[in-house]
Length: 88
Image 1: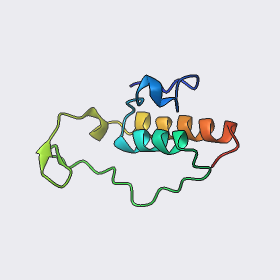
Image 2: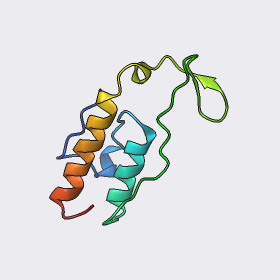
Image 3: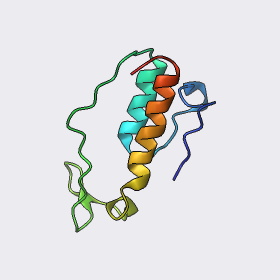
């Protein structure tokens, strides 16, 4: 799991932090752009048993299908970063 370092997170001059989900990258871009409040709705965390995902039916050998804890821990880390700056 890529750790989300608070000191560099949100500074896109270093590139986007590759978290456990594309949503994590989108949250970093929103942070960089100065959004004070971000609401997530309809985030799809479903990986089919056959490994196919996304609209195109592509496959991935993805261990997130077996262990959701890192995914949600990364959301918590990001939430703490937002709150530290008075954001939601």
